[in-house]
Image (cartoon, rainbow, N blue to C red; front, side, top):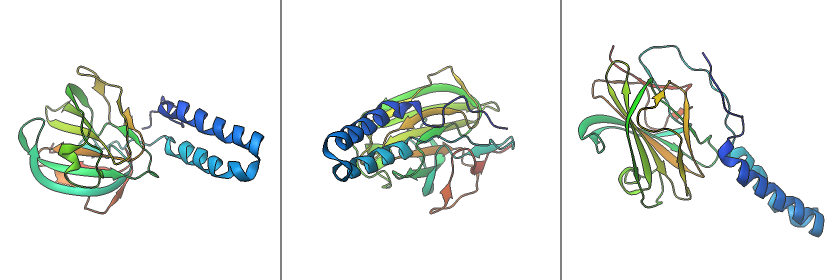
Length: 215
């Protein structure tokens, strides 16, 4: 199954892409290609950062899908700071060359949403989960299980974008937000969840099954 109502270049980047290419073009026209070359490289970097390719959604009913592209930097039992419960946290770190579109890990309804301003330390560090700017979604699955999905700003990320609110329904793989220029996504899962990934694994949003919920 595949659903993709969004363009391949994310709307969140259109303004930045337009500005980057306009500057490169103006420098090229007035100063020549040699001066403009670094600006064309910057423009191409910005363009690749905002790519947002379609993804095939796995049909497995109890699958928890990766909410972002990147590398697994944490798989641990810990306290979910949003729902005040014991949970398993799986963290995906996105570098500046990963796709930064965020997608829902499960089917469910958003019960609550929290935003916290904070720092911009390296998102690969564990303390980023509690100290950096972050936006958290509490998703109640169709079987009544709780999943917390947290967007976390990184070292140079300056804006977390989230398009959904409490009461909205998300389908697995549905795009719900974006983080600009380096970041992390944490997923807090029930303690009896079967985890399918390990630290260091590369994962891809929607395509990778992070874990499996109990039936």
